[in-house]
Amino acid sequence: MQTSRSQQKERTRRAIIDATIAQLSESKSFASLSLREVAREAGIAPTSFYRHFKDMEELGLTLVDESGLALRQVMRKARQRMKKKGSVIATSVKTFMEFTQANPNIFRILFHERSGTTQALRVAVAREIQFFVVELTDYIKNVGFDQASAFAQAEAMVAVIFNAGAESIATKPAERKSLEERAIQQLRFIAAGALSISKEQSSQQS
Image (tube, rainbow, N blue to C red; front, side, top):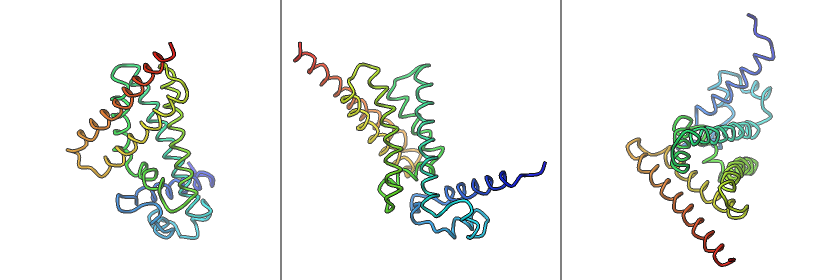
């Protein structure tokens, strides 16, 4: 079957994205990649790059969007698991860690660029992380906390999860279990503290 021009264009665009992701590592962030490196890895001429992206910043924003989609997949998978069995916190951490290990370079975009040198990417990463916080806030509200308390817990929990995820990418397999258990314990401390404060506030109001 003959490939249409639009299909070929989409394939080349995908090749550029995949080539970029493939070049990321613990020591090589997106900001350190050049357009020529990306084009060479994708098997295209540097001038062809501009038929698909205005510049490297636009490519970076596309990668951030893909990373955000991966995060939403994490949340969906965790919720599906929680319906079947298991602790909410333990299930969430295990699911996040699994996704991070399966897609390390996609998550490196978020881990590296949230404090990177490009403002547009920092803003985009902050937005994607905020979506993650909002989804978690909604879940926490459903178990009995008000908006402010739920949001504060969600922010703290996301910070712990992201730090653990960033560490896990550079951690040896034998050490990942310990890292996972530490993250679970930290999240339980946050949840227990929030519950204690909520009970204290309720007793003061009654």
